[in-house]
Image 1 (cartoon, rainbow, N blue to C red):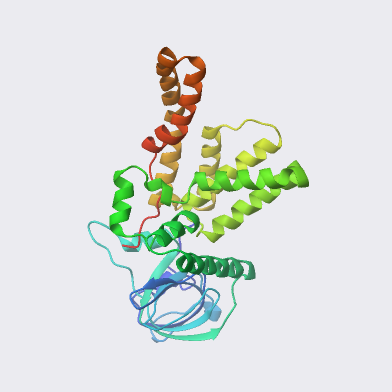
Image 2: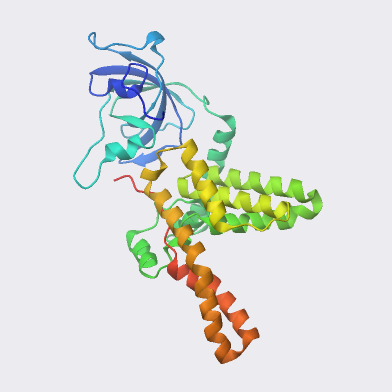
Length: 336
């Protein structure tokens, strides 16, 4: 049901069929591309400029395109654009299909260096626009108060913006098994949820404090980009908060299974998202192996330092060492 049909009502129908005029709204914050911008545009209407191409009734069309603009452009989320040019399919090779990568993210066409005209602003969600402005302001402040590479590292840890981290630094984190530090994951969500619940549960009560914590996780998910790995962590964190509010012990495996099923129900293309694959696999590995490894370490320590000291040391080692050594970085597949 999620697959688009090859009919004039879907934007993919107009790929490689000559010049068209597209009316659409920028649906995500822009990213840099060469000297211009890369924009995801939610299409509203399409007008074929070739007489032998069928048009949708009323011109209304569904779908999204990836628009690459010329140098010097400065568009933003919520801008209503008129795009005049050809729609092309993304590149494919034996090693990687950029076309399939975009397709599983709901993007059916690519447009480069089209003639783009700004028709209106603030046509998106006011709430999302406010969150995206806060993100840009936060990134700017981080650049101003810290030098590089510390600034890039802070932006990666707090806001999921890893583009400024050098390749050498990324390789250093990968080689030392600490690459998960610079990825938004369950650790970030656990710290945030724990902080909110401790600060506000006593004042607001259990239910209101839990609701505030869940809303905070939702806000932070949008703020850092809302990738599949971040959404998985936020949903599992929310389940943990709900369980604690009704005094029920959570099961990590049950939570992971439920969250994965819910995410696939709403987006059946997620199995093709490498970030989602790594996030689910890393979490599953931690749930399956961290407790047995910690128990084995505790038994080994009991024979040498006694039960009480073994319990303290194994807990610390399990949390800070064993989990780190056995976990994988949760990443988003790059735009290749």
